[in-house]
Image 1 (cartoon, helix red, strand yellow):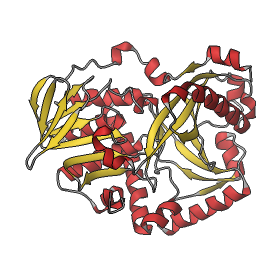
Image 2 (cartoon, one colour):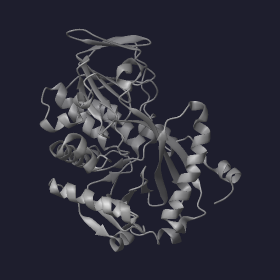
Image 3 (cartoon, rainbow, N blue to C red):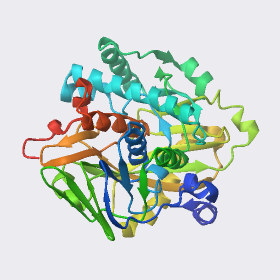
Image 4 (cartoon, rainbow, N blue to C red):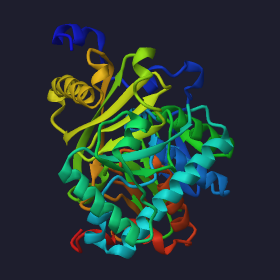
Length: 419
């Protein structure tokens, strides 16, 4: 590794490569919300979950308007890793202990179905989001991790879930990682998350959705038959409001205590020389290790490595820059211990993405008893984008009064009764 001053000059800190490298011709230009508008559903939040939900509702023939305080896709969604994972990123054993085996099974099967349907939607809409179908390896690097992984595999298989365990040789061939064992999954993919978000926003607009940028929801009031969402320059009246902001905004302070506010850090390397790439396995799988917090490693356009991890509690804004530089160096060092052949490679981008984590690690999707005419999509800590698709389908079913039994796994009933 080079010295900190040289590294600092070449690395682009605090900037998402997805957003920075997107051609201006693809970036949507949406107006501010002004005046009065009446619709069936208003969505607060223009990230991937909000755009996906806008598309799902509009495709179902429901009038929908979306308001975003900044620009569509440029929040946490545009800073994510862009991994469509087929599991929720938390141990099955942990969810089983918290909610029971039936609920855990429902959660895993819903997540896998969402991943498959997300992949199918990207293909059907022909979204220009650098889609690449990839499986994943959940690897164990130490004997203790291998023992826990073996137990994880057993409880998944006992619950009727597919969880093949592969050995060190197979892992080395697939990903050139020195690990003892891994659970291998096949139903995943990677995308450019910013292009996916704006592509879905465009698809929603094509089906009649009204999209507004730089229009924060300043107030939300509800009555027996309607809900009003006020922006700085107007009001939208709807039958329901969908709050797809990832974490509770100041309008929902009573919900804030149910989340841990965290930041994940991401690093994209400079281009890996071809001679080194040839030594790094087939490069077809996303690798997630069993560290706490875990690393997620994937290839971008088969030339650069993207690693996320080093999660920590979100600190004060004044410390953000210092922490970002430190965590970028930490992740590059940890990546070089996983792939020694890349030692000396420099980080091209280092950035962070905030998220909220719930007590059991699963998101809250659906209605809350204290907020009539509200539907929420909050607390996706999976480090993947699958939860955006899952949220869109769960929320649509709730709106249509067609909720499935499996949807209850993600409900607010998991909160303490005082919540």
